Length: 298
Image 1 (spheres, helix red, strand yellow):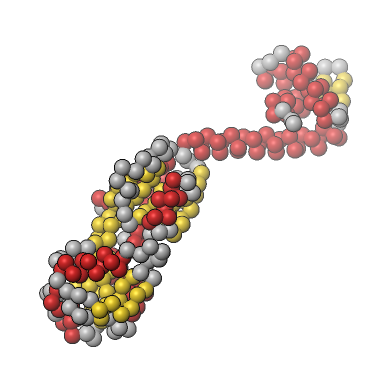
Image 2: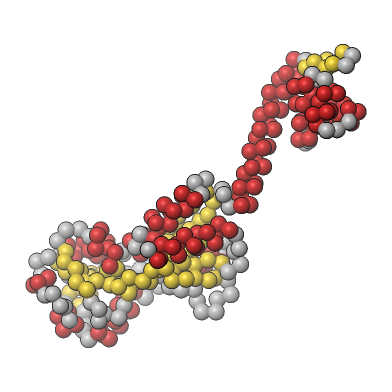
């Protein structure tokens, strides 16, 4: 294994053409410098210099070795700088999980824009995951941060979280439906109507929570269609197949042919939480949490 110190000594002597001058530049004595160069030649099994009186000259092998030695030292310097940047959080990589609601709310785009300005050399890997899977991945260190629908389990020793967005649900109505002309929609208007809901597998709880909220509000929906995501639900609403509830921010992404109405009496909303490991004290994690927190206040 080559010694980088010997490589630096070799380059200094080769560029100075004199062991004494090279020793002065390196702030060491001439004798140990000469000894290090000879040890390098012995290790390589080849002479690198032609020696004549007080001067040394690179031979053909030395000139070839010098080019590679300079490249090696340049790479070593870059590697050293990378290590410092990784330690300070200037460069590196993080894996961030997210649920679809965080994308619809604009949280991911806002975080990426600001973080890219502050750390242009840092790489963020985005991974779509269900909430429960994100908690598991945080514990196993497969993720560093996660945007999830639920807070960390109460008293969890490993995971911490904070609420970053709460959005009310709005009612999506086909444009040609008579209900689209009603300005103040009440629970009685919705009893027995055909509905479209999102089912998240595995271990879906969305349907049960939706039905419970409907019963609490005072109506019973006829769930005729189930989809994998809210944008698909809006597509079915646009086709006139039924009603749906979606988070408020999705109104701007909805297809044509849909009318939206607020339901202030409907006790359900979409919550997005940011989760992380309690013992993760890295500066970059703290910066990302502050970036997301600033977005909450905007």
